[in-house]
Image (tube, rainbow, N blue to C red; front, side, top):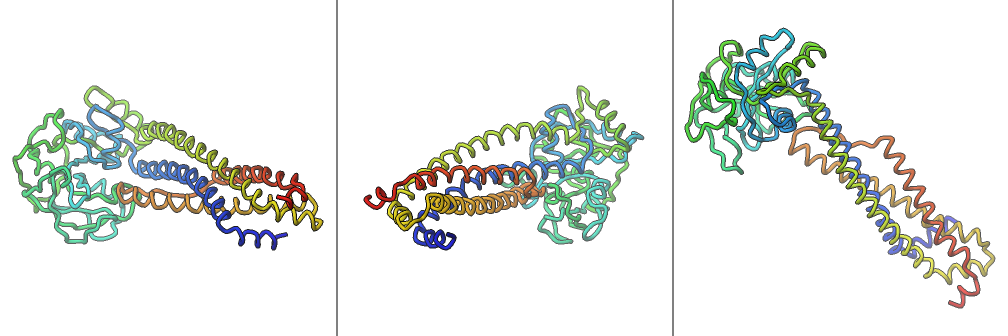
Length: 412
C-alpha cells in the first residue's frame, strides 16, 4: 500500500505540492502570530525586569516606561532636580539613577546617567571601565564602536533634522556585557555632561519644559572634569529617575509617595501588563484572520482533493475491478491525503518559526531587547488539533472513493 501511495504521489507531483503548500501556509500564519506575540511578551518583560521603579514628571505612565526603560525617543516633561536629591537621601533607596535623553550618535540613543546604573546593568564590564570624567562614555554590548572612539552627540536624530553639539565630544572608555535589554544599544554618559551641554549645569529648569529645549544656543562642558555624583550639591531638571528600592515594601511606599500632582511613580511590569492586554486583543484579531484563512484554505483543500479523486476514477475503478476491497481503497485515499497534509503541517511549523525568528531579529536590532522565539505546550496542542482536523477532512474524499462503483468508474 505504501509503495502504491508513493508511486501515485510521484505521478501527481503538482497536485501534491499544491495541497502541501496550502496546508503549510495556513499553519505558518497561525504559528508566526502566536510565536511573535509570545516572544514580544517575554522579551519586553525581561527588559523591564532590570528596573524596579521609575519616577518621572506627571503624565503618561506608558510613555514614561517606553522612554526610560525601552529608550523610545519622545519628549518628556522635566522634574525638578530636588526629586533626585530627595531620592538619593532616602534610606529606603539602594540607588537612584537619573537619566536624561534626547541626544543620539549614529542612530544609537545617548543617555545621561550615573555610574550606579552602569554597575546595575553590568556589574562587570566586558571591556574597559566606567566613566570617571564628564567626557567619558560607556557603550552597550550591541553598539558598533570600539574603545577610544570619539562620539559627537547630536541633538535629536539626523532624520529629524537634529544638529551636532560642538561643546563636547565623548570618548568610549568601557563596554557593558549583554543585558538583553534596549540598553545594549545605548551610549551611557555622565548626566552632568548632559546638563552642561544643554545649559542646565547650575540653573534650575522649569519642569514644564520638554527635555533639551535649549533652542539654538550652544553650551560647553569640560570633558576633563571629574564626575561628581553628590546630588545634594546640585541636580538639574531631568525626565526620569530609575530607582532601586531596598525592599519590596519600600518599593510600594515609594510609589505611593511619588504619585502626586507633579510626579509619577510606576512599576514597569504593571504598565506592561496593561500593554499586554492590548496586545492580547490584537492577537485575537490576528488569530481570527488566521482562522478565517485556514477555513478558506480548508475549503480549497477539500475542493482540490475531491477533484483529485475525480481525476483518479479510472485508477480507483481498476483497483476495485482487480479485487481490492472498498476498505483498502478508503485507506489508500485517506492515508495519502493525510500524509501530504501532515507534511504540510510540519513544513508550516518550520516556516512559522523561521518567519518569527527573522521578524524577532529585526525587532531586536531596532529596539535592543531580545525576542526569544520558542515553542511551548500550547503549540503542541495546536499541532494536535490541526492534525486531527486534517485527519477528519481527509475522510471526505476517502468516502467518495469508497462509495464509487467500479463499473461506473471504468465507464467514465
